Amino acid sequence: QSNLWMIDPRVHDLGKGIHKDIQYPGKGPLPVYQKDTKAVFHFRTYLNNDEQTLLDDSRNWDEPFELICGHNFQLECWEKGVQSMRPGERSKFFCWPDKCVGYAKLSKTLRDMHKKKLNKDAVISKSCCGSQTTGYCDLDKITGESLIFEFDLLSVEQPGQYSKQIWTMSDEEKRALSVELREKGNQHFKEKDLAKAEDCYARAIGVLEQLGLREQPNSDAWNEIEDSKLPLLLNYSQVKLSQKEYAVAITHLNTVLKRDPNNPKGLYRRATAHAGSWNVEEARQDWKKLAEVDPSQATLVSKRLADLTAAVKLKELEEKERLKGMF
Image (cartoon, rainbow, N blue to C red; front, top):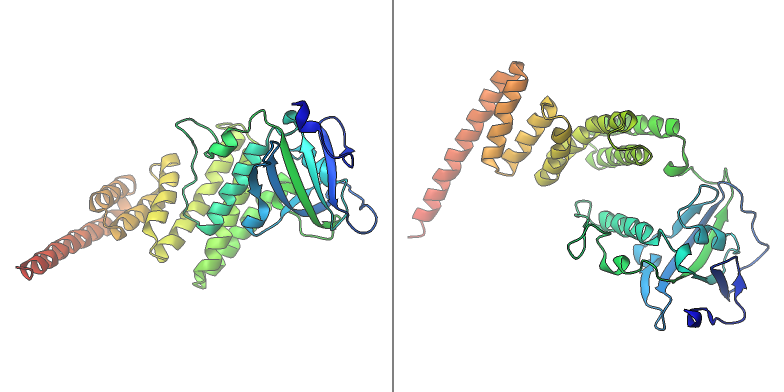
């Protein structure tokens, strides 16, 4: 690997395994980087090979990356590199393989987020080439590789100059935010502003998912967080039902009913979504199970089943008439 480190003599050594090459100098004095200082920058990631193969470019994802200092960011070389920069500066950081551990996971997260932004219902791949990996073959191949990170530092903001990011909040702040977002979502739904209601519920679910990342799966704390997500998933699915996006509603209701198989609201809404998607047998099964777990709903279930049977007969009749007209 000796040829990888035959770099321009302008390169600055930021410690073992991190070498900086300034492409364009920034302006003004070096900012004070303290805990909770926010650095906003675009980045490109290259393989440290002869071609400098491009892996990622944040400009393709529209929004720059935001790094909050002093929170044990998973890539120490990024935090150390950014803290050596001035606003307006572009620099390349040549990093040894041991300094790049964690990049594949970070890149996967950013790529998945971009996919979800482009298509909220996008299916995120969990495997590549038949194995349980990142889902991106190029990322699966960078283990043990040296990488080059190119940063364009756009701005530096000190604590108190920006709104706190969710992941920097305390657990108590996150729980309070999830409750606040749920209440706002409920209000938007009452006002029939489905887009805002959907956004609030989705953000509240995201907050709880971040809380869950810190807990051991199936621990008491983890289970409490998973249970807290159920009302939000139910509300989100109701928005999707109102928007007639039945397949999306079914996906989220499957999550609810996997955790709580006898949830009456979950059964009612999934039955409605199946009926809307013309999944007749699935709808019947959910209606019947609802009557079993909540006998007070028996009359309503009977009516829904009768309505479904009538709809099936009507559709069959219409289909016969359509076929008759073809001959």
